[in-house]
Each structure stands twice: as structure tokens, then as C-alpha cells.
Length: 194
Ligand code: GRF
Image (cartoon, rainbow, N blue to C red):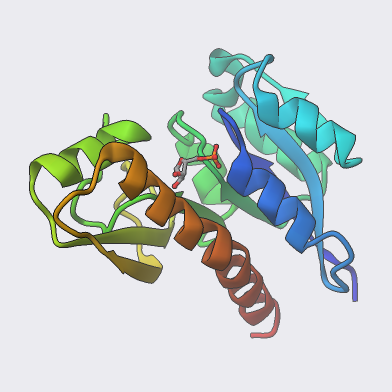
């Protein structure tokens, strides 16, 4: 059986993207075909290249052009797309071509603290301001609206009295690094075996 090819889309540091690359390095059924960014100077591209993974950067106009990005993914034989800190909207054409095959990770317990503008530190700031007793991560399918596709998995962490944005970020990132690759692996393997 051919391996499932995944594309990782990332805009920033890419700690999750790199963690996924390491996880699938010598996986018998799943292959990271490329990392794509809408920022040509994104650190993730440089680091992924060092790990021997193909990288591509496209302008915002290109990644938001459904026909262009869909054809690109078809030409690259992509089966699944994983958004790992990717901040642009996914065009409807791409969602239509890959129904239930595009995954995102969000650094909070959706539906809380999701939607437009809720990314990076803004999420943890809102969690702190709201005096939440817990937060966590949500891994979900991508649809036309930000952070509202069907949930695949959530993981929680407790918050104490003296949290800061940085301590919340550390707790959330630890969950992301521990669980994101495992959930993506399990979801892809299940989808291939139905
Ligand atoms: C993560 O917190 C992820 O949940 C969110 O964007 C952040 C990306 O971090 N979607 P990194 O670039 O993977 O370090």
C-alpha cells in the first residue's frame, strides 16, 4: 500500500510542524510530503529543509486562490493536510477537494476562545483575563469558518492561581507536542482503513 502523503501548512516558528516531521520520519504508512508557508522567511521552512523535507512558500494571494493551491496539492499527491500554526483562511475549493482530510490544532478548548483573531498569545491572554481554571488544546477538522469544524480530540490542563501568559503557553505547548502527532497518526490510519 502506498504511504499517505501529508502536507503541513505553517506560518510561524513551526514547533508543531517540526514535531510532526520527527514523528513521521520513518513511519511505515505516513509520509510528510512538504511543508508550505505563506511567509517566505518563516523559521519553519529553514528548519524543515534541514530535516530533508521539501518546502514551499506562496504569497497570501496564492494560498487563498482555491484553484491554484488545490491543483498544487493534487500535483504533489497529497492525501491529508495538517495545519500547524497556519494563520490564513483555507479556500473552500481546497476543503471541497479534501473533505474531512484537513486538520487543525487550536491552543484552547473550543468552542471557547476560538474564531477570528484568536491565535497565538491572544488566546492565552483571553484565557487568563477570563480566570479560567483549565485550558488545553483542540484538534479538529477544518471547514469554511475559523475553529468550528468537527472536533477530533481535546486535551486539558489545570490552571493555578498565579499563571501568566507564558506559563499557560508552556502548558498548552506541552500538550500539543505530546498529543498532536499521535492524534493525526491515529486519524489518518483510521481514515485509510475504512
Ligand atoms: C500552536 O499553539 C497551535 O495550536 C496554533 O498555533 C501555534 C503554533 O505554534 N494553531 P508553533 O509554530 O507550532 O510553535
